[in-house]
Amino acid sequence: MSIVVKVNNLTKRYGDLIAVNNVSFSIEKGEIFGFLGPNGAGKTTTVEMMEGLRKPDSGSIEICGIDALNKSGKIKEIIGAQLQSTTIYDQIRVKEVIDLFGSYYKKSLPSIELLKEVSLTDKENAFYRTLSGGQKQRVAMALALVNDPEVLFLDEPTTGLDPQARRNVWSIITNLRKRGKTIILTTHYMEEAEQLCQRVGIIDHGKIIALDTTGNLIANAGLESAIEFSSSQEDAEKILQGLTGIGKIIQQGDNRFILNTKESSRALKELTRFSDENNINMENISVRKATLEDVFLSLTGRGLRE
Image (cartoon, rainbow, N blue to C red; front, side, top):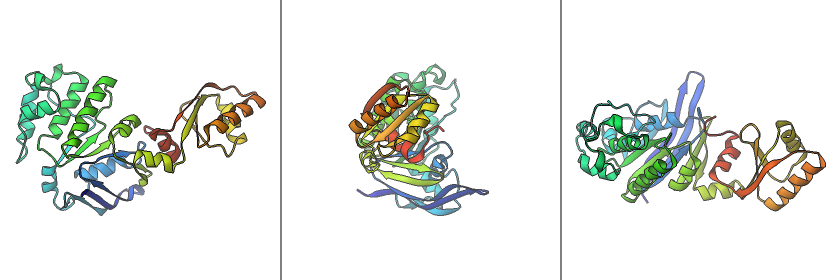
């Protein structure tokens, strides 16, 4: 596969804060690349520099062989971006807004073709204000595709959508990949990243701390299983101090904890034995296969929205 996006030694400072610290990665043609990180980790700043919305202090960005920092005009013709929120005039019709955005580019796709792409052909004459949340997200995606971009940036494309609307958007994204589009996806939904992305990059404190396929990230982190349980903070502290060598315990919410382990049977026996011997109350115990979210929590020690 050919490399479409190259980011090398990208750095961005805001006073004494290094928001993005010497970040490098590449993305292959036709790949859905997930870019994950807690709030304030440097994810949005990195993506905005790639989109040409912010200037880096140092480093380079190349998209489709074009220097993105020195030829931003050319870059804007070959990329599309769906931002976290899109403000559109309520009284405009769906087809009209797509035609309007298409007029901003040298080359644009017919609005009827884009409406078909995002499954909104029946809404071409509907006013934007009458659309559901999921339909508005699909309009935003059509606008990002209006110039038939080689590289597509999707920033939280399913935030706030119900499960059915979210899966509709997933289907559109998957079809775009089949058509050869290269997609950079940021999301707060780990299931979304697992379902859609060929590779995932995790950024924290301005640095890339992991980059691989989901399967490899889980395997390399040694997180074959996860034991979830509820307990008081005081009892959880006793467990943390009294049990070693069976895995890593991470707090997920006020009274919810996850024990990541390679040996689920032994870890569960040790956990229950220790709890019985020390009068520790545990509830809602379950064992499951480790997920990308477990890897994320293990690496960063915090959730995506923290």
